[in-house]
Structures are given as structure tokens and as C-alpha cells.
Image 1 (cartoon, rainbow, N blue to C red):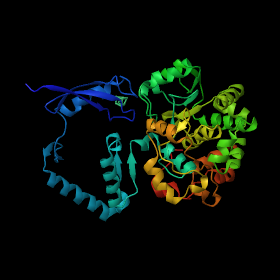
Image 2 (image 1 turned 90 degrees about the vertical axis):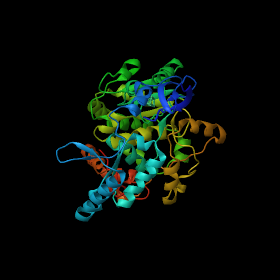
Image 3 (image 1 turned 30 degrees about the vertical axis):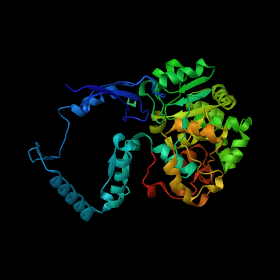
Image 4 (image 1 turned 45 degrees about the horizontal axis):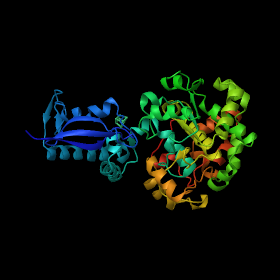
Length: 429
Ligand code: SF4
């Protein structure tokens, strides 16, 4: 009988990338279990991760092309037949309806696989279609849209460094059940519980008393009112001079426009619209600004609700003005020194942004220790002339609260003035 061996590996289902140990016999995985020595997941893995070897051996797994027959049953086809058939059908669609009639969709297994991801992007390019969707198209598009507005590239994602933070604002997310998304943190429940245990504060803003909310300070909010809360917090920070002037000076452009925007979120109106009293909003702003480090994190609830791009924009704006962008314990980026001054940001930087932006919080930390202050972001760059293309629903929103859409335009338009539509992203707002 062939001997079994233990191999270290990791789960590729979600971004937490939990460490696993595989028991392997003759190239067959017999068992997966959490790796207690993995530095991030430290012995945690959810049921999906430890069951994944059963997917590989499932008798229903499709191992070769299957062609659907007219009666609805399937018959095996060769790879040659399958490629020829698919190619002919794609060409027919292009001929009859144009390249834009074809869309490309990928899911997490492609997203975590560089070769497959690059190939899929190449396929879309070869087909000449801009319709490119992923699992993230469902609930993360507001991240991409806000990133393009604020940083000039869609792939810039600030990740909350919960493991080191003193203050965590969690909006519309339930990470102790979901295990976190766009957090890249294994053992998220323990990591969050550690924050108050070391004297910090976790505030969960959610209409529902979620499993996460029951563990921490819960601030109920009326559905769809996220921008009112965040905008009003921003207003308090500006009015009470709680802004990190050094961060604003070194990391931003166009801060006056943001100040003007924040003025639109009148505290009393925000309280009425959000269901959160003015004193609580004010205290939240003060607590976040006073914390040595702070994160402002929103996920599905904040990403799928009304005005979700504006919500993400304001979440990041809170982190920016409090000096918590690209800072340990704040909202962290990838590992490369992309741009040190706002003036460095330009079309030539986008490629580097996209290559280097980040999901690797741990690498970020290592680089923090090595290089210290490294990253400057250009936010709030004003280019009013292209503004009509951007955030059209946000503009409606602002018009609804005071008819100051022109101010909003000047504040948030992306530095290259490219409409979302041209780069294939559609905001949910
Ligand atoms: S949380 Fe679950 S699915 Fe995600 S990486 Fe860990 S084991 Fe895999």
C-alpha cells in the first residue's frame, strides 16, 4: 500500500487563503485539515475549505466536454469538437450582433489563478468586448468605481488592518459569519474580538442586529442612509478641526472640494434620515479621529444599497482625512512604492497601480517595517469638465439634498476623465 504524506497547502476558495494540511496518497488528497502553524489563519479553516477534496473526487464532476442534445440529455464530445463548436458559435454571435453581444464572466477560482485570469482577460480582449464580469461585479463594483474616482485606478483596494487597529467602523458587513470579504484575514472573529480586548473600539453600523453586531457596539441605521451617516461624520471632522493635516497635505489634492461636499450633510438632517441621533454621529466622528489608528470598512450591505459608490467614497474619505490610509492599523494598500506625490499620479501610473495594488496585507506589513512611509494617494482631484460622466446617480442624490451637483462634480471626477462605461464598469448606485 502506498504511504501517505502530509503536505502544506492553502485554500483557494476565498481571499482569506487559510492554511491547510493535505493528507495525500498516490497523488490523491484523502483529507484536508487546518494548519495550526499558518501565520495568518492559525489553525482556522471553514467547512468549505476542509471539504474541497470531495469536489475533486465527486462522481458528478465533469471531466470532459459534454454537449447538450436536443432532448436535453448530454453526450460526451472531444475537446476538438467542443472548441470548434464554441468558436463557431462565438463567431456567429459576433457576425450577427457585434462584439459587444458577448460577455465574459469569471468566478473566484479564476480570480485566484493568475494564469487563468490573464487568459480570460486576453480572451475578452481578443473577442473585442468590454463586457467583462466577475463574482465581484455583483457586490464590489462600488469599490472599483470609488477607487477610480479617488485613486485613478479601479484595482486600488484599501484593506482594513483589523489586526493592528484601535478603532473599527464596520458598515453593512457581518464578518463573523461571512469570514470577511475584501479583508484578507483568517480568523476574522478572533481578530475583531482582539480589538476591544486590547482597549480599542469596534462599532457595527447595520439595520439588523447581526451576529457581528451582537459582539460589539451596535449602531442601528435606517436602510439606504449610509451616506448620510458618513457624510455627517466627515462634516463633524471638518467643523471640529479633527483632520490630520499632514496626511491631507501629503496624500491628497482637492481637499477643499471635499470640505464643501461635507457641508452638504447637515447633522440634523443626517440624523433624521439615518435614524442615528446627532450626538451619536458626532461621537463616532470624534472617536474615529481620536483613535491612534482606525479602519472604516463596508461590505455587502454598504455595497448593494442605494448610493453605494458614494458610500465607499465617503468611507475612504474618512480614512484619508484621519490619516489612516496606508498606515499600519488603518486602511492598507499593496506593497509597492507607486507614487509619492499626487502629481506622480497619471496615466502612466495606472499599469503599475493595477499590478501592485493589493490584497497582500502581510506583505504590506513587511514592507512597512522596511521602508516606512511609502505611498501617497491622489484623491479628490478636480477636473470638473468631464464630470457629467461620473457618478450620475450620485449627482442625482446630491441634487436631491440640495442641488449642489456641480460641487460634487468638481470634487470627485477621476483624474483621467474616463467615464466608467468606457472601462467596462457600471456603478450600482
Ligand atoms: S475562510 Fe473557508 S473558504 Fe475562505 S480560505 Fe478559509 S477555508 Fe477557504
